[in-house]
Length: 209
Image (tube, rainbow, N blue to C red; front, side, top):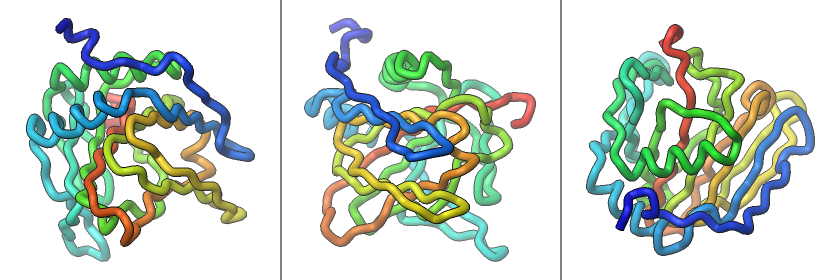
């Protein structure tokens, strides 16, 4: 099979703005088919070097149960929560997905942060993807594989919220200026007992890295 046809994109994609103001977020519920998504989830677990995420909280280095992998072009270092990450090289399947996701916002990405959630006990607290290395004008494209999880947005000023379930094979595009006005979180739950991988494709400004 030709690598360019490893994954199929649903031709009937729906993308409406999920935010009521000061941002633009589009959701594509069937960006990849169910079988392709689960195959990719299993492949990524084996092909990447996964590490516990490390965060500096109140001066202490904390290792999370959630695992991460940082992929990118050379010099695409990324620092968040006080920890600097060096990129692993792109794998063939990630390059294919990157090119397909770039078609949605008509933008180019040079890096990808992958999060591996073992089950619903793993989550991500409220934050914005606004680190200095990130190109603030570039969209961020997210791909969800595995268990459907609740994903929420919270406005930074009025604290209003909006949520959706990110389904297996779905894509989410966060356009500027979403990060300026909104935080987002992956909420923990006791009802999910199967894994999930989330891929967020980004653009690093090399001069700021």
